Amino acid sequence: MDCIFCKIIEGAIPSKIVFENDRIVAFHDIQPAAPVHILIIPKKHIPTMNDVAGEDDSVIAELFAAARQIAKEQGIAESGYRLVNNVNKDGGQVVYHLHIHLLGGAKLSPLLG
Ligand code: 5GP
Ligand code: ZN
Image 1: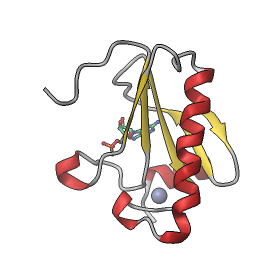
Image 2: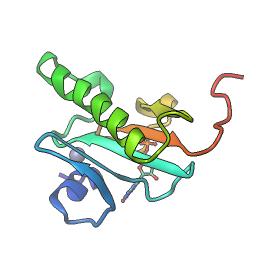
Image 3: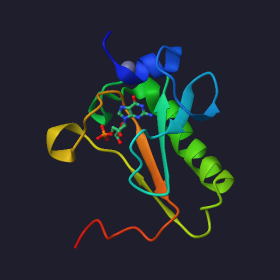
Image 4: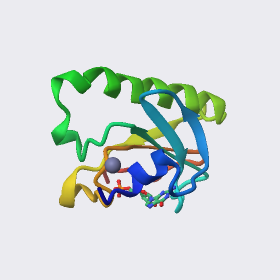
């Protein structure tokens, strides 16, 4: 399967991993849009949020639990951060392996003007 994030999980593409367990992995975005920009992904290849099946609910909860922990470790839990999940074309999704962006370390511009 030609998926960049699956290759990162396999270690075939190098990345700066900040968190890993049996089900999820988190690593620095290659093109950071904020001082802290980390991607949190399931190890299971799920293309988009639309493809999450009932049995995946626990892994989705784990993505958010990891986000909370990583935000603390990165020292941005109190100053604040944003979690983003882009879905399909209009949502701006580029990599079709489900991921949550953790963004912080600076005042982010409002998403909705
Ligand atoms: P999307 O637009 O799909 O929500 O976000 C995909 C993200 O993946 C982008 O922020 C992009 O910079 C990041 N990205 C794409 N290819 C790589 C890669 O090979 N390594 C890492 N670390 N991040 C990547
Ligand atoms: Zn994948």
